[in-house]
Image (cartoon, rainbow, N blue to C red; front, side, top):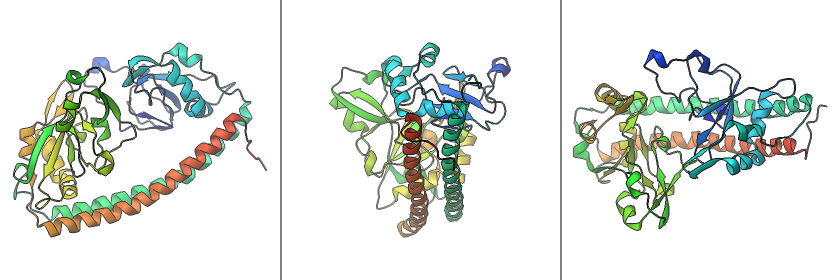
Length: 367
């Protein structure tokens, strides 16, 4: 389901189907498919994208829809833009059903009844062309950012490989390791609504807080599971073995959030370990191979337990050397973040232009 994002298809977000009996060619994603999520959180239900180059042997899950457009009256790429327009998003959120904001559903009937702009095909294609012109500029910047990220990753990896991973274990270096809140047992009448981080929020080296779920919790739930800047979150389980154990640093912006029980929270004595260094090390090749070779699997889920985490290799590195490695990483991250800032500005301009075109406030100038 997470492969379908606003305007783009992320083929890497998938799970492996191991039983051949469950492989259904009729559900395979094909190039040009217009896809929509039919179940997700309130802010994500009904997201749509066109799968331009989805790759081979990817099937749609039962929480997605494939929309077949009558191309005599509508361009699929135009329909995708319309589905992402704020006016359409408001309709989707209004008709989505479900008692919890954490999981809303939209059916085929509600999708068919959405009110959308009715424009001639040439005008639709002009709008799509304007959108794609922005996409090309943004894509160029994204490729530069990706290249710099790859070079930074290689530089940091080279520095980490110089460290002797056989020095000691993670257990001897961390102050504590604690799994997060078990959600089911804590759903009580609302006392204080609190954001909490899930596995999906923890990326390799950073936290994605664009979609933070809300938990209705009592005040007694909070202190034990509240995050503070400098905490390191580690993924305990994932359907993809390449994703288990990925680690991210909690920053000032995430302080006070809770975290779910499929995550471990690690804390360190900062006179001995720089939290950023610990995060970088946990995402390093040495530790990644350690997780993959030792993780357990059950019902398609790969997991690591607290004992495996405690026994992970960890180098004894002077605090000054840790800081040098972290500063190399921070300098590179600032350069990449600058590019992402340019991309965000272009996205904002793009959104405004497309909204004006869809609403009829402006027209594409063909001269």
